[in-house]
Amino acid sequence: MKELSLHLLDIVKNSTAAGAALVEVFLTEAEDRTLTIVIADNGAGMSPETLSSVSDPFTTSRTTRKVGLGIPLYRMAAEQTGGSVKLESALGVGTTVTAVFHLDHLDCAPLGDLPGAAATIIQGNPRTDFRFTRATPRGSYCLDTREMRALLGPDVPLDAPEVFAWVTGYLQEQEDALNDPTQFPAYGAGI
Ligand SMILES: Nc1ncnc2c1ncn2[C@@H]1O[C@H](COP(=O)(O)OP(=O)(O)O)[C@@H](O)[C@H]1O
Ligand SMILES: [Mg+2]
Image (cartoon, rainbow, N blue to C red):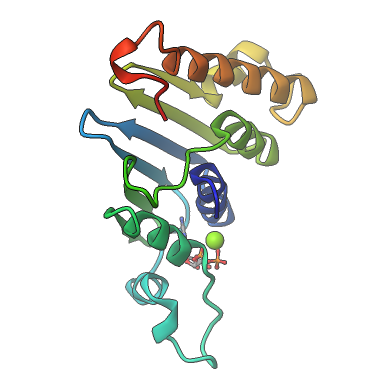
């Protein structure tokens, strides 16, 4: 995939498919130019067997259960920057996927359209709660659908078109502030 935001869409889909009620996404950029993406859900979780087969689909024989490529591709995207992907999961508890990317590595995909990806995730799963936390040395922001629900009231579902537009606009504003070189001259245009 060409953008980390597209991987985010794909990996979050695993969480919603596992019936998560809450998915927390942390995108943390450090001074050393690493980006750590943590996706933590309280969905069904994985058995130790599933967990190990997911880690490497190519060791599984064709006659066993179908294993997808989402996590292997994500791992490849991280490892090609010198980073890594770590999975932690427990049945009935949930799953946490932690990926580290080295942003200055030549083979690091751009973050891409994070506001669009987050808005798409929220719109596509109106009954699931999401918390997006983005932290960088230049500033940080957070968006929590539980807070949005409280403000919007019971009559406005999170898949309403005006909610999609508001989320996209809000997150784009936050991203623009993070990437404004006049506000944060030491970091230039950011990522
Ligand atoms: N967050 C998660 N919660 C529970 N199971 C998961 C989660 N993420 C991945 N899995 C399991 O790992 C499998 C492989 O995931 P993935 O590589 O994304 O491929 P795919 O989604 O196409 O099956 C999933 O089918 C699912 O069984
Ligand atoms: Mg998947």
